[in-house]
Length: 293
Image (cartoon, rainbow, N blue to C red; front, side, top):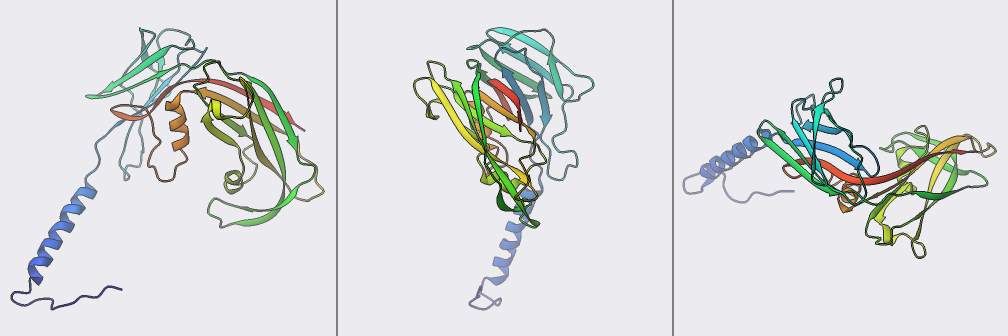
């Protein structure tokens, strides 16, 4: 509750003058809110160790009232310099906003690269390095013997439905490089038809940590996660399905970006692009699709 003390007018009370100043402040604030923010380049590129140079995606920021949010930029100049060699890019005609390298070139471990994108007077740059290759040594999958009762809900918790879940434990094993200074992202991707976002949030389907912080001995590293498989009755067997597992090694730039993507307090992920938004990072990836029966 708000209480006002004193008269709302009269000579010497300061009421009308205070009201005019208050109205002026509101007007200035409204102008500041309505004024659209300046356009900024949005750049995305992932250079993978042992692979050819990637496509570069270039878009521009747009206001909240723009029906075409983050529209593609089709006439930018894109140059990626890797290990001192400049690689020019050209637009991919059938996919607006995407640029492909004019020449083939394989990215090697330890190489550094710089990406520069210019468009209508705007310039966005980013720099990163290629980590050592990463390889999954083995994967251990251990489904529960029987399902547990569960309540399914959508991301807002509005639709509730009773059912049963098989919990499946998965452990990834890999070898870290001797210097052990990289970051690693682990990820389990069961079929999209499996449980709701609420269930996935409660389970451990991925992690982003410094590689040396994962458990293990010497250079051996491991990570354990769990995902859920829905069934209708407690007597139903575990349905056969495909599971994608991924192991990604990177520097701190990509790790910071991946962690901030799920931060509800941020408007956009924490990228490494100077003069714009987005991410251009080096990474190494091993991805496998496994049959679970």
